[in-house]
Each structure stands twice: as C-alpha cells, then as structure tokens.
Length: 219
Length: 227
Image (tube, rainbow over all chains, first blue to last red; front, side, top):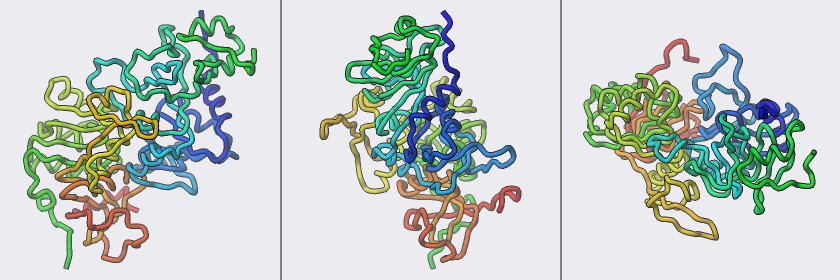
C-alpha cells in the first residue's frame, strides 16, 4: 500500500506548533532542520547549534555568507539579535547540563521503551560518525524524533527493540512521522494524531510494536 | 618583556616531536588552523596522534597532513563527512587508527585535561557500544560512564585577535574547539589574523587568557576577507 501521508514540511509544521515561546531548542541534522522555518515569526524560540551558537537564524541570502558562521551541519547560517557565541565545552554543558528544553533528532529506529538508534547503520561499521547525537539524546530535557514511519522498503522504524546500534536508552518521548504523531509512554507507543488517509489498522501494520490509541486521536 | 609572537612558521612549530598528541581546533573547516597543520609536513614530526572533531576534508589542512602519512591515530567525533576522502582511503587500507568519541565527551575530556580533572562521569553513551568496557556507576538513580581526560602535547588553534601576552579572541563559530583545546596542551600555538598592541583587546572580551598560550604566529587575512 502507498502511505505518503504528510510532507516533510507538514511534519515540520506539526512539530513547530508544539514548541512554545521561550524554549531553547536544538534541531538535529536532516529533516529536523526544516522546523526552524516553520516556527512563526512572532514566537521567540532560541535555536542552539552544537558548534557554539545560541539564537541561530536562517540561511543568509546568496552572496551574504560569512565564512566563520556555520551550524552543526556545516551550512552557512545567520545569528539573531541577542544571539551568542561560545566554545564547545560550554555548548555541551548546555546540552548535558539539561539546559536545552528540546532536541529533535532523526532516527533509524525508535523502540517502544524510548530507546533511540540514529548514529550507526550496523555493528560492523567501524567508522560511524557519532557527532553530538549521544550527548543530545542523553542530555536534552526532551528528545523528540522526526522520521518517516517506515524505511524505503516498508520496514517499521518504530519497533519493540532496536536492531541498530543504540544512541541512548529510554530517551525519546514523542515521534512525528509522515503518518502519525506518537507519544512514548511507560505503557509503550500511544497514538496522538494520525494522517486522515490512513486507518488505525494500516498504521498498526506499519508499526513494529503495539500502538495504543489515546482518547485524543482525531479519527 | 613577554613576547609570545614568533616571526616564522619554523619557530612556531619548533620542537614538536615524533609520536606527539596534537589537538587541532576547528569544526569542519571553520576555525581550523590550516597553515599550522600543513606546515607540520615540512616540520617533519611523524607518528602523530591527532585530536579533532572531523577527520579532514578535501586535500587541505588536516587531510593534507594525513595524506602525507604523518598521522598514526585520529581521535574524533565525526570522521566521515562531505569530502573526507583521504581519511576513508587510509582507514580502508588499515593505515590509520580511529577512536570515535561523542562530540560533547570529546569537548569535556579536553576541558578536564586543561582543568586538572583526570576523569569524570557522564551520562553520554551509557548503554551504547562507545561505552563498552568502560566503568559505569549509578549516581542518584542514573547511570554514568567514566571518561578520561584527554591532554595534548601540542594544541594548534586559530584566533582572530591576539596580543604579545597570548590573549586571544575568536571569530563567531570559529571559537568551537579552539578555546577548549588551548587549555589542554603543554604547548599551545595560535595562528591569528590580527596581532594587536597589549591592552588593545578589552579584558572583558578576552576568551583565552594568555596563560594558556605559548606561541603566536600572525597570518593576515586574505584581502577579500579582511574587514
């Protein structure tokens, strides 16, 4: 079956809608970076980048790039008024010290106990790039995941137990996929919202662990 | 009169020995002191251990030093990145050793080394393969991994302003690992874009106090980048 669901931009808008003014937020490399553009202009959310930025702004206009101003994905960015620069040890003190309200990461797999696998594609890979993923996953106050619901081959990415090497244990509290918004609770995955074109039965078929229905689901 | 400024690249890199551990500042290309790194080739030191966030890109800077066969071991968080072709070839051929460290643990191991802390417990990596064989302790109901300080023999950093006492400032996201590595080595060598009179840097904005810096080499910005 085809299950296109929400576009990445729509996923980003859903996550952005849940971020209140005043939060300090780190957006992982990849799909989560789209969230930055989805935050309304009149809501002050302070974006953190591991390489030493708070108050990160959007990409500069072409020709206006500053060679010394990049984000953790090594893309040129800008800095908002009120922004700050700091060194790597301070940057990760913010992360590990629990000062970051939210980190949104991509994932290979998320388990129903909140385990996250998002850094290495196999145990055999001898040179995987971990970057700041483990620090963010272990240190942020909340870790949300933004990912396609299944792999390109249709295999579930939301599972009972991760098969990929773990990034951190029991840290993910919410997942936004192209098909559904799911909370990770002590009881397992709880469906909060879903795309209108997919039935709960089909969603359960594409999910590798039991999916509890919450009262609030818009069916 | 204290004057940490050196006139030549040879003076800047004098005395670096074979087998040294070299801390290399920068995050990707930003803040990476390419002149100092590449000049290690002529300086001649071999069998180096390099600590850096990335394992070089393209064929310049760190990648060039690696391609010259001078790096035995690299300790980094993100070895494979856009353009890390030299590292990948060397690694596949078994010609370079690799230690992967989570980025925040790397920064804190350096900070600890500079601050006289031999080891510390961190929640990062607990339960993952990067914590394998490391001591774990439960503190206040949470599990932590024991990580060791990571001191360098030499740190190579890129500064923006420097004075003859070795006080440094950095430029925007170029501060990254530079400021923490400057504290963690026995010999810290800075390449700076602007060398100014003592007192010209506002004490309120000094990022790396001169106590952490031994040598300064001035490398003026290319004209198109100079303010």
